[in-house]
Every structure is written in C-alpha cells, then in structure tokens.
Length: 343
Image (cartoon, rainbow, N blue to C red):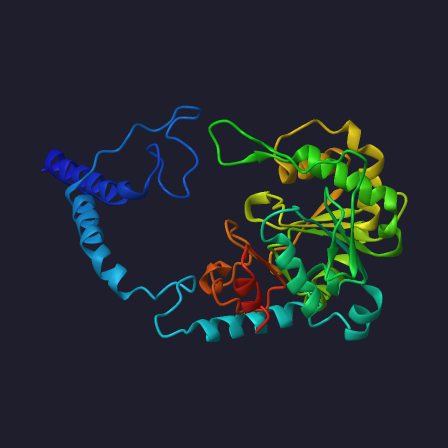
C-alpha cells in the first residue's frame, strides 16, 4: 500500500504542476525566480490534460470577447457628422490653449510671412485672393512676395526679385515625381535674412501660395510655443522651428521659424549639406545648426501628413470642407477651393 499511495501522491503533484504550466516561461512558475538546484534551471514541464482544457476554453472565448468589447475611441461612429467632429476638435483645442491669456496672444505674437510665386500658372490668382480677403501672408504683420520676374499683386504689392539672375527653374529628379528645389529656396531664405524684416517680429513663416493660412487663428498656436524657453529670443539659444508633419517630418507648404532661428539659419546656411528636396534640406539644416524642434500638429491640416490627429482621426476626415479649428490648410491650388476654406 505504501508504494501505491506514494505513486498516487506523485501523480497528483504532477497534475497540479501541469495545471500551472500554461502560464510559465522557460519552466519557471510565476513568482518563482529560483530553480530546484542553485544555478541550475528547472527542467521544462509537460502539458497536462487540464492545461489543454484551459487553453481550449480560452480560444473558444475569443470570438465572444471580440463581439462584446467596446468600440475603440479612435473609431468615429457612423452618426457623427463632419460638423460635429469639427466642433468636438475645436473644443479640445480650446481647452488645450485655455491657459493662454487673450491679451498676450493679441499683443505679444507678431509674424513676418513670405511666399515665392511662379511667374506663370495659378499662383498669382491665389495670392490675389489672399490679398482681397486679408488672409494668407497678407494677414501677417509684415510680408513679402518673391519671384523671378518683376510683378505686382493687385497693382499694390510689389514682387521682390531676391538677387540678380535669380531663376525659379527646377530639375525633375529621375524616377520620381519630385523636383530639386533646394537651390531656389536656399537663395530665398538668404534673401529673407538679408532683408532683415524678420528682426521686427517673433516668427517668420514661409507659405506656399496654395496654402490657406488663417493668421489670427494661428497666433494662439504660436503663443503656446513662444512661452517655451527655447523658442524665446535669447542669444544663448538657437531658437526653434515647428515640426508640422507626423513622424518627425517638416512639410514645406508652411515653414515656421522663430526670429532667432532665422538668424542662426542665415549665418550658418552654407555649413549645411545639400539635399534635393527643400523642406527635408531645411529641417536637417536647422537641426545641424542646433535649432530646437517644437512639435505643432493641431494647427495644420495638410494633405499627405498625419498631423492634426484627434480621436485617432487625421484632419483628412474634414479636409474637403475645411471644417475644424486648424489655421493652415494645404493644398488648395484653385481659387474656388482656396476660398472654400474661408467660408
């Protein structure tokens, strides 16, 4: 009887150990960091019938769990209209900026804006629309339009040629749909630096003509960044620029630099390695010059970027109608589409 009792006891012990084995790793049970012999790991435990039953029950329960689980907040319900989603985003952003006094935004955030205009195509019409509505670069405190030919906007705004012999010709990159535009915009940024208007303002903003820009709305966003120490004007720091596209990319439709960052760029631009795409070149150049990055996604809604995320939804959810609290929208390369964002 003693041998038989001992065998039954051993079998019961093994079954109990097997029941626990499905949650073990490398033969060690939960909470047990030691082995039977010091320095020697315990041998792997075999799976018993109870373990198999538990696993089978878990697998059978998976479909039920999937059916009963709550809908993720990143999914917009079918009955959420575009206007309701835009209103919800606006309320979320209002809470984010609620601690910034309105008088600070109105009196302490100044912008110098500029754009480069091709002497052909629709860009002149887009800039004329911006001038008529006092939006885009013409809603900033000071502005300039650059081109390769003498011109005017509505016979009022003179177009500036940055340097003698300046041409806005680009070379298409083989095998891609991109063009090599860095030489053009490197010359333009140097022209901005030499003109010196940026010295009179907190921020310098380069905008493509097909970018809809609502400057008064964007002052709120800039005020938030301006309160960060490394964005303030300080000779011991190199200023900041806004990273405006998801995954750490700078998107060239709207490039925003603090005044100190423009100064650092103008003094060190020739130390930056060449890169064919202007926005990628500028982002790398500023980082190499130790200009700080300040991420800004809520103010931008730009096609091709995953910025402006709310509830897991990018601004593409209301991109066509331009609804939402964003201040910068891209790309709208037709006057009718551009104007739609102002309604």
